[in-house]
Length: 140
Image 1 (cartoon, one colour):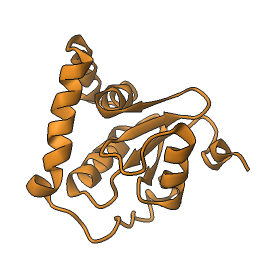
Image 2 (image 1 turned 135 degrees about the horizontal axis):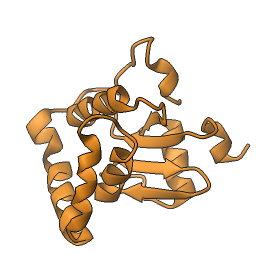
Image 3 (image 1 turned 45 degrees about the vertical axis):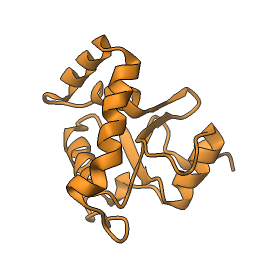
Image 4 (image 1 turned 90 degrees about the vertical axis):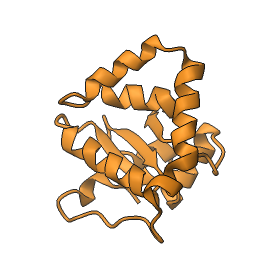
């Protein structure tokens, strides 16, 4: 089975740090704003997350959110945030204006938050367990 066959058709996969409180809160906001049901999710720590990272050639120890569009592209750091924002409702599409900043500057800001996220927001012992209503959005 091809790795991309593990992702439902016409879905984009968001890989995130499953033990990070900030990341968990962010994913909950994405789920609420994903009115067109574009995204499915997996933690970076999961078996599928590790398989996808290997498949696309990203270091398994990455500190980045990853947006994977099967058979199209993948995005990391600030590019992932901007690409995800395109598909959300509410104020989130405004994050696309971040593209006016040079990528190196956007990624420096992203990396600063990523380096400090556990200190500022804390860390869980294990990945969250989604509620029954949203469990179908999480791949394992």
